[in-house]
Image (cartoon, rainbow, N blue to C red; front, top):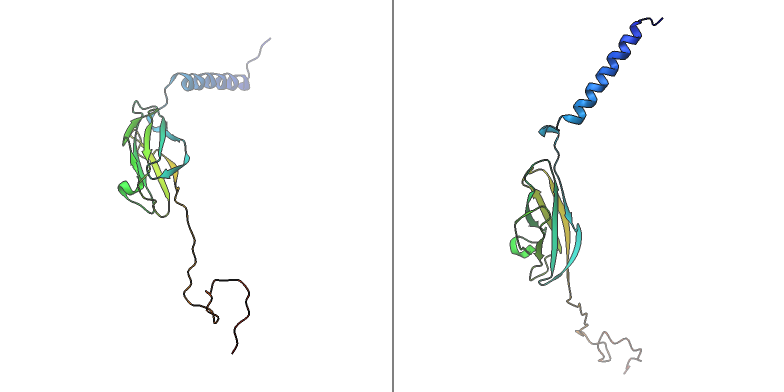
Length: 165
C-alpha cells in the first residue's frame, strides 16, 4: 500500500539535515571568530562652555568577552593635550560614567572628539562630538582715522553741507 520512492528518501534525508542544523544553531555556542564587539557613547553630541564646563559620558560595551573596559582619549584639530580639556578617568568599565572638563581657553576650531576604545577589541570604537562654546561677547567698535573735509569723523553719517571758500 505504501510504496518507497526515491523522492521519499530524499525528503527524509532533507528533514534529518534540517533537524541537525537546527540543533547545531541552538546548542553550539557562537565561535570567537563570529564575535563582534560594539561600543556606544552616551551622549553622542554635546555643547560645553569654556572655561571649565563639565559633561558626563558613559560608554556601553556589548561583547562576548568578559572584558567590558574602554580607554578614553581626547583629540581636536585645534588643540593637543590639556588644551582639548581633561577627563576624570582614562579607563572605565561599561556603564561607569567619566567626566569631561572643558579647557581654560577656546581652541580654534572649537570641536573636540572623545573616543572610547574597547579593551576587548581595539578596533571597536565609538566617538562623541563636543562643541565648545564661550560666554565672551563680541563687541564691534569703529574708530575715526581720517576726518572728512569739514573736520567731522569719517564714520559720521549725518548729512551736512561742505564748507566751500
